[in-house]
Image 1 (spheres, rainbow, N blue to C red):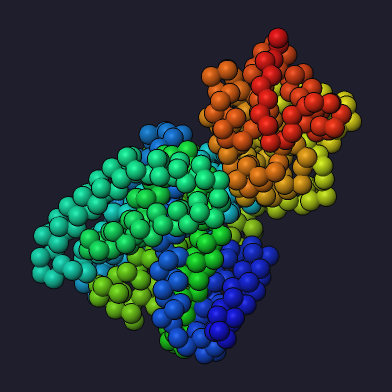
Image 2: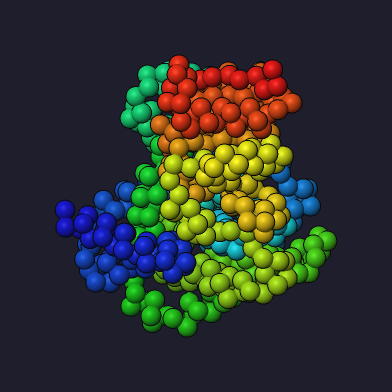
Length: 553
């Protein structure tokens, strides 16, 4: 019990401190584990339970990765960016592996290190982009595309590391066997998801018992991991494939919301367990080589990516920014190196300095971004609002109306409501439109309404009504589903382009639906008044009832 209390106290304290310092919680968890572990202050000695929770953290990390890799996201970027991403991954892995092999490592170990260190941190880079307000710039979109390709590569890398650990002298045979097993397991999981997953989740969702649905989500994650582990593959691979399958279902947002707390807690414990495995005395004794590895990793990755980006036709300024942004190591590298150490592919003496170097590289990136922000603003113009600024700017709002989407309909709707004296907050995903609107004194903030962290930062739960004014029905459906999963009692009014979309939005939880017409903004405003003050209209439906209003009729 004492050790559990120590772990939780360290979890909370270091997460809060490093988030406040904007260094990222991953680095905080690693340092916390190193301090309280057996090689640090010795407050935690029994690592068996911690390692079990850490393994679950890896499983949830890979499941969440699969959950985020929807096919539609891959269509957002051009072919040139994907060619750059694939080339960067292969070339960087080859160069790092060659350096490791030249340094005395065997071929198998060098291959693992090359693949692991070629990856960049999705968590750190997305945090930095959001803080700089550059998510939708060419820099942001290119970086996200490269990270997506790297994230997809994690699955094959897991299979590779597992195969290398069992290869012995027959590497080709082990790789072929592992690949065959992986294909078979993936086919089984895909077939199960297609014929069983949707009906199962639908039946459970119809029970309207949230804890049962949460238990079902956890069963899917752990069950898929169990299946791949007993097939001789990595348990994390099964979770990754299961996430890919759930990502294509209508239950994606609800599952993501249900497992979010488990994933965050267990993932933090995983990074703390990694920190506990580090011998601080050994790390201090080898501080020089560790600093050299950190600097070498960042420089090699940055130079290679910059050169390749210029070769693929990117402007030198964007290429340099990409290289600086993606030079750090990845959270998935800890998983791959840990698996390699457990399989005997890499010695623990080799893994420990690499773990410390990875953590340092991940801490350096946000520090560098903080120092380079003014220069970036001069080159590309002022940044859009970050989540921190969004949270600070909306903290005191209560009982207001939130409008999601500030196109023509959203603008006209905002004018209607402001003219009626209603307090309004607008979220939009177009940085140029946000900057122009804020220059005119309008309460418009930059943010993707389909992300839970944006909705929480905007304090949407404190609003009396949310109006989804997005032009796309599928986008509106995703946002409504997410809103109702986060804030079940919130009134949500939705605009849809045609009557065919009404039933889906009703099922997603919309309180009222307005179909596009000649006077869409006016009709949305009228319906908003009725939902904002339902007592003002006798016989009006309650917040939980769905109403369809045909605009322009």
